[in-house]
Length: 58
Image (cartoon, rainbow, N blue to C red; front, side, top):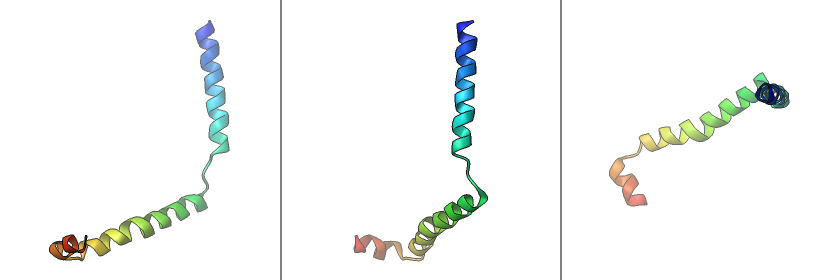
């Protein structure tokens, strides 16, 4: 019986915590833009470099 009570309390707390941190569509769009800007763009720039020249620059 004690296990069932603890399980119910944990489930209720998890549902309450999930409600606090819900993401909106705007948040997801902003995170996607920032991820592309600061992740993909530098990777594309690095891929355009000559490997030997890039290693000499370090």
